[in-house]
Image (cartoon, rainbow, N blue to C red; front, side, top):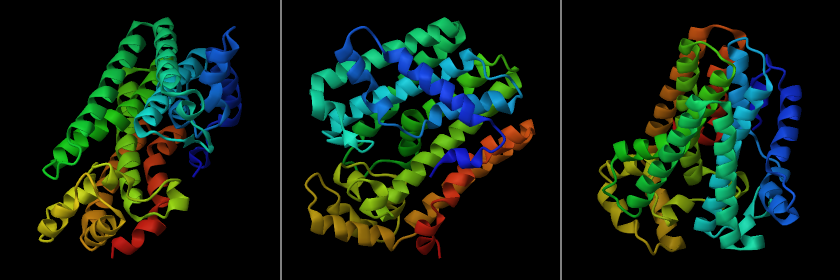
Length: 329
């Protein structure tokens, strides 16, 4: 799924070409070892969703995509990359983006410090873009950490509430997407109404993105996921479809299966119970609700660029519908 397919109004090819050059320059230093480590995942590629949101948010206000706008995209991309370095250490991952993960190649200590280095570079870029952007990025980092801690805090707890789930994903996923839109609009010096509207678009998109991923974790095959299915269940992360299933009459049957020592048999039993409930359908409906909110926000601005930006959430859901459809009937 390439979200640039949904953004035909913007001259993203030229913008992204300039962005890629600046991104590599931003982490290249005289120390070849440090450059190799910090550029490892950059060179491996990636969807660049967050910088695309920053750039498109500027386009949505008919603003020029200046170097400041591109640098704002670099700041959010470096934060995202840093989170991947740290996540791979926590998950003991061996691969990322079809290449050896940083922790697997150079060890956990190097991966953690390199992630911290990327965060420091992002903070420096944000500071040079102005006080408001620097404060925005700092607050976003706090939200990311708070969301992740909230998720860890509720690991293996079948008593986890749906409100807690939404609070966690609002922090760990939606906050950075909201900031990606906001930082691009701020760097383009767009008016406050525009800044608030694109921020809401990014937040709704982030919620859709995470709910969709949580649904796919339960229903998609390994070749689609790029990892073993039901990984969240194994790690005690009970997402929205699971929490909805626990609220149904079969909840008492599901609950004893959700432990910190699940084997393949208990995972399959738990999956069977979850997929026979309306947990997937209810979760999908919530994602659609956020997607509709995003689209309506884009229409408020009214430019073709803004309408496409607001429609990204629906684009993501449309590309998932075939997998989800059997659970919606």
